[in-house]
Length: 401
Image 1 (tube, rainbow, N blue to C red):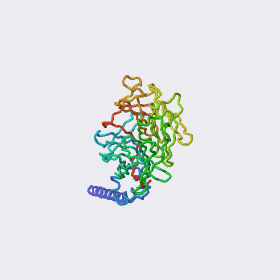
Image 2: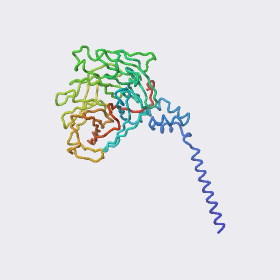
Image 3: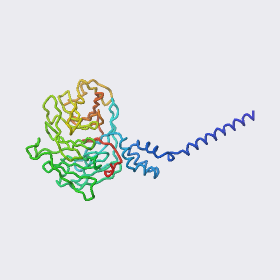
Image 4: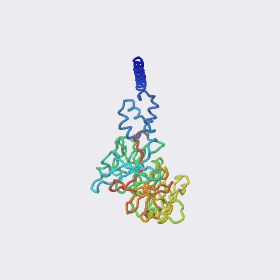
């Protein structure tokens, strides 16, 4: 019996020794010993905010890898699209509260808000490849370009028009031919477009190019009362301005720097300018038109400059909508307190190919899923959300594309 117990003790020691050898073997093959391509393939899928704040601190090799241009570009391609939401913190100062909103779930349409990391920002204007154009929060009349993750920023010189950047249309665009970022500013078309190239020398100045019209009589709006709004950016390469016209909008290819008329789709009735809004949907310009109190049509611009081809993508019809209450229960469309008058909804942003964010004239917000015909009313933990800008975080700098 004693011999048998001794054998058991020896077996336990052998087993524990083997286990220890196994753990030692596993520990010797640590993460730092993996081939660089494997580490690259793993880290490139990590959200840029996390990999910037934490991954760079692991070791020098990781820091160098994360700083490489090919990693930054590939990491950006892996990043999910979100919406950047901004609203003023007070009427007395130029500070804005800015958060990032992610929409999840096909049927429940859950919205998640998170801080962007900066507490004092100016009015957000446009996003391109993770870079944000915004008003300077302290100095009136200046614009900034900033990466929200790295917090690296550039303050642009004052533009020749002397615009205060309160009632103008501005956007950050990318020229894929020259690999350059440009700020396009429209203050008054009689003055012309103002363009600032971020790849220029330190003493670079704004350039002025002609506006879309030659005489005041050609404009579709009241010249003295009309104020330009920020354009809708499609992939950061083509910009579209709503100009209160019943026939066309103004478009510009960032590479060509030439403004052109893009004619509106041919619908069943005469278009009224106050009934439509523009939004970006899945890399295309969308024309959202309130046909009646019970129907809103969504058109997509398939080809902007070669033929200007529009196609009807979807109709939001009151009797076909599945309404989701804030408690995530489905109600029929004819429920007493379910859906608003559709003609009083305006599209403020799109996310992906099938999600629209709509705002009612009473400031209530709705999400609509075109694929499943589901609509949900939602509230945001913000006092006055005014700007909804499609955004994808990145580690990009305006001098690496």
